[in-house]
Length: 485
Image (cartoon, rainbow, N blue to C red; front, side, top):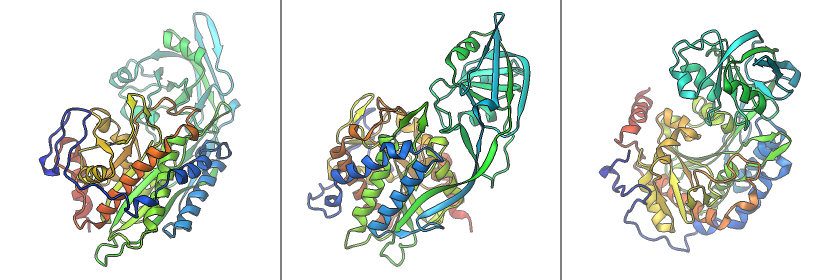
């Protein structure tokens, strides 16, 4: 549902139309925007999404190399290191892993027994499981959530949902009590890069519900979907080892004595899917494009003679593809106080203009478009830099919780994700490569972002959540954040 918000100083016209606002055109000689280069973006991205980095899976040597590259670029720009280890904010977690032979599953139906092949299933829980032949029941996602007992004591089989942390969502919302959940995941949307998963040792081991096995074998999945099957399973305990995960953080200190201890945050996630079935998933647009945009905008702003009044934090986040891990870690362990963080703009998928719904040239959109007054400033910057800034009639709201802005929004900080394309042909595919990026267009969008970021950093009035119904819980979170001592 769309809402007209007069307090924002703009009106939403028809679905899919840009917001109109009166603002002067920016000079082509603005020293900030002239610092942003398509060639520079191409150079950064051709490295970060190269095969050498092996898809930047979490954890991996490739994602560690990416983090070091980002830190080097922050260092080159002259940003102040803001982590516990130079530019790194370190999360000391654990990595649990099972070998292919640690999972054995057989499915019996119609008098025939099928074994899941080695590597055809993965399981991201710690305790071992042994299950003798047990009836299986197949349900669609919503039917499984609505079920009040038909799956009790059985193996619940469901299709995978295309959302981060789908298994946890299902476990936490189930009303029934199955012995095991088998999630059919033919496309390996939820498979881990090397068959393992991450554990945050600061959090108690969650007993969310029945264990979940991800099933990738298409023939076995088809048998389970037809119904009338039984399942036997043996899942051994995993091996567990320590691992370091890193957010990369640099800060451009503000110039105003009263405002320099308040922060505007620009972020993007630098991980991707890694290697799957022997193929490298380079993740050039998702989200190499957002990462190199953070690098480029940071360098452009740091090169200016006049610093913005507020400080600007530039943050590259780990583990978004595994469930917004880096941003959630930051929200729980903020480097800069959240009550002093006036806004977070997160960048995703800025490089591809071949949107699945049609070309998006000189165009940008934002999640939670009218949830806060950030949209007002973004629109003015868009007008001054020749960009169409618009609200997608459905995806603006639908995707608000699907990227790293969500963690800060939950804490009460006005936070949004800006994108050029919500969907594109190679999304989460092996062909999302750097040669398909429209670098000239990405540079134009970067210039709009840089102008908006500078405007917010120089404005004595902080962004705020609006009165639209979908922003209600974030307004409440903001009240609690600023009421805290």
